[in-house]
Image (cartoon, rainbow over all chains, first blue to last red; front, side, top):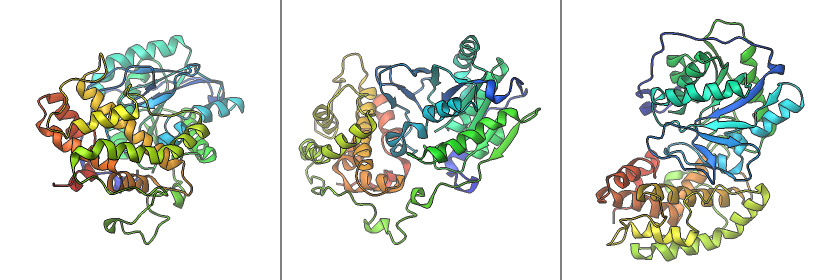
Length: 147
Length: 262
């Protein structure tokens, strides 16, 4: 959204302050393995739905047969776009196209979704563990996408 | 609040050695939290890549976001995506004379009966509405190859009966799904119902924006009327989690003032 379009109730939401500003360098984009991290409350239909207060994540396996669904607890955003085209929220097809065009190195098999209606501080333990898993999977770029 | 979440998560990932790029839908949150690299996009909440079914537009957003990884540090890096969605996807932009207050707006080709006057009729009225929409729902599912419905574990008849029971004299005290809480079942049944309607609407001819479809759902369908009534009825439910879910997660803030007062 543009700044003047943001609902006033969102502006009063408390945001965490970070005293450090970590910055990772690395190889060029066309050599990087990319994973998507959504906060849209996405999951495979066979997985456990998100609920109020959930601070963990769901695994999105690109080789899974179970369809992708959204169980974010908030109802104050558009969902009609997602039901038409999952790439609007989780652009896996677009990412694969960029990999085929060699604009990025590769696409991870596993991607992940949190449910963003909670304080980021409460997601920190799960996020730090997930970062270790991403590193073992040789992911060197995480694209974080809100909803 | 998702921009707040991705911005915070980016700090943790980067601190653990994983390079990140964030897309932001609420620029103020990104500017306050200062994740390492941010592309702020001007799109409505729920549409971070801009336009459904438009690979070229989506790729433009994605390509810009990913390019930030090659911006020299130190951060934070904050850039704005300067291209708006086409007019046809701007809420209401393609219907210049539409008067939402007068009940105009995007119209579903399927004609529905008015919502039932008696709340006890909700289940049958909802099932009839679902039956009328079913050809479009199936058309959409066939075209996409998937459906986003089905998370509740209930079929449409069970959803109609379950949701209607919340506005009856004897609201349910237990979930109809083994192992699921009543509040989770309520939320998931409502989301299944919304997904069914949105998928059906999206399959019909003509462009429709997010606000057109939302207006249709909340003001022209029995489903929307029922969900709003359930939200209101649950404020006095014995289960506090049901009260909480009903108060905050079923009906958008923008629609809560339009609940029928009977």
